[in-house]
Length: 265
Image (cartoon, rainbow, N blue to C red; front, top):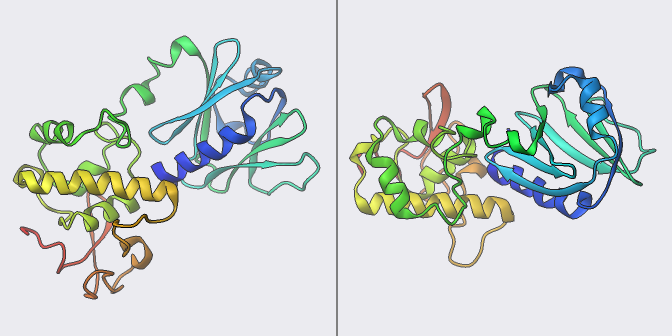
């Protein structure tokens, strides 16, 4: 499932390709992908609109269009955008095609869980799925002090907290495991038991893991061994070599090292 780094990478790629282009027409191949408005109205409203910007909020892609329109797209489990030539054979899981001047932008989604909404710009602040999102973990406003204040009013296990989109927007199951591995914190650790030094480790791991995910590579001085590369039952810990453990936490499969991530370490 695409998480914050993958969505951010998609946004940056689209930004280079579609800003300034005009949408000549839209072909909706799977009407269920369009949540609002109705597909026919969706295609009419987009015809002739120019793309002014592409940004991200949580796991949502936000396309700013002229005439005060905003297109919101969520990739969910298998969604992706392909920027291609109009005559190229389309993938069998193509759901929506945006015909731009000279190119096609195709939304491909094998599992059909991805969705889109077209809104007036004035309606975006009140759009419920966006309004309930928490802080952006890569934003300047997210500081170690901000995290400390957030954790003071929370209870429960650490891993499920990281997955709450109303707390930290964009972190999913895979990156939550990686963050806790790099912070050397057990995923079942109680939030209220964290010491100040552990909160700081958690904050640094959140930033480093997500930034590295966006870049796709490590920088000097950053941790190199990744749990994501060996995340399977009995896979070797990239730090100590111990066999990884798998368990269900908050309904999600969770991997961790029983040596590096002790419950009360």
